[in-house]
Amino acid sequence: MKKITIAIDGFSSTGKSTLAKQLAQKLQYVYVDSGAMYRAVALYALEHKLIDDNVLNTEKLIASLPYINVAFQYNNSLKASELYLNEVNVNTEIRSMIVSNAVSIVASVPEVRKQLVALQQQMGAKKGIVMDGRDIGTVVFPDAELKLFMTASAHTRAQRRYEELVSGGTTVSFDAVLENITSRDHLDSTREDSPLFKAKDAIEIDNSSLSLEDQFEKVLALVNSKLAIA
Ligand code: CDP
Image 1: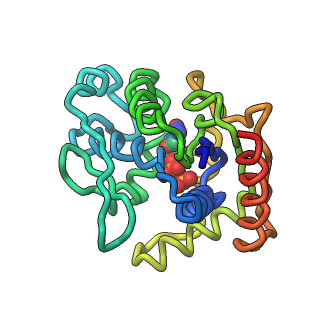
Image 2: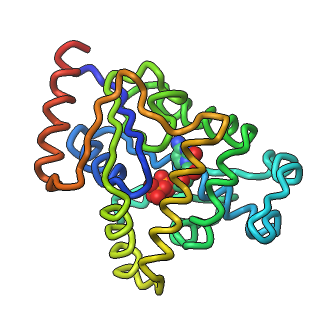
């Protein structure tokens, strides 16, 4: 059976990772959360005091890049990949609001992107991959057979992320989540290197009022039509 590459881009909290995981499971493809990789570099920058009052020491971060090793490892009992930063499992830490507030600044550094994009391209070299992020269909896999661009209203997205964080035990206010989402949307869409935008051959999915099941069925039909011509 031929395998394709599926690129899912879109704004924060549009349900990219939920859809990507569903697809990867159904198709027996590898799932890669590229945002987790940027979050790990942001965590490194925070741990090494390279960010002070929201200002990043870009030069020091670039000099540190050879010492930043980001890798996924499959956890058999969780049946999911977890992210390791220099051999340490940081899967939980990278989801904190502190990291969320720093990540878009770190992700705007071209040298950081170059290092992570090279890794992402290696992971997808044999196809059979579903990757979600901001520049997957535009930069990482411009030849992906299926490109999706996910959107939803900022309020819907903030509500989803707020519920996710609270149910995971994080104390946070709805307003802080909304503010983080809108500020990342802005930074991610306006940065010079690989800004977030819909590739011209991407299919837009606004899931503000689409159930997970309906969305999955809709996308699966798209996958099948691409597989038929692959
Ligand atoms: O989970 P959420 O959608 O909020 O974000 P994420 O996918 O974990 O990505 C976190 C941040 O990493 C984004 O806001 C971007 O700044 C950056 N990112 C990126 O620049 N390029 C990607 N391919 C993926 C994420």
